Length: 228
Image 1 (cartoon, rainbow, N blue to C red):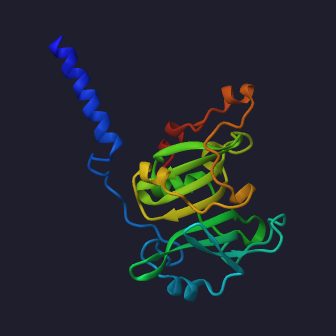
Image 2 (spheres, one colour):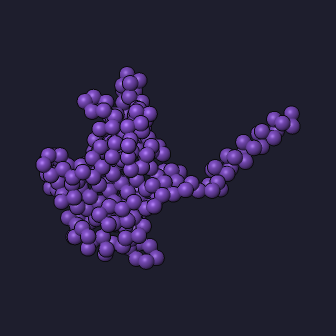
């Protein structure tokens, strides 16, 4: 009986430590950058010097969002000068003024203007390894989160005609590195439909599809073994 009581006590203590984030935080990687913009470090003024004036901006909750985009989202042969059909700067007020806390890139372009900036899943795995979490995007897309490295990406999850390594990247968010639990708790300024929508975080597949395409369908052994 004392042993059973002790085991229960340990479980309770462990749960409380986990629930209230008392465990030491995981080791975090350096903050990622894109074109010289580093979330949590680059001010809005510095970012605007790099990217120029946006096409529009708007408030989403506590975030000021600066948007760079092409006019016709259906034309995937066109793109911004950086190889994406849309780029968003997510900005918050900090002690040192307005600071970029996230850079969201949407829809890598196709055709002659394609830019090799994490075009396929293999590019992301080569840079960051296996993700901390894989969750639903929609039925044939998945959201991959490298929270400790400050990266989230939505990729296709269709084995045919591409291999797992060559699944196209749909969108990428870079942010300040944090624990996966902190990432889940953060109220990110998602907006819109399709490419811009919030990660679904729930199954949208018919039951017969889920059997062959579960929440994490990727063959990580194959993907990781192919890395140089």
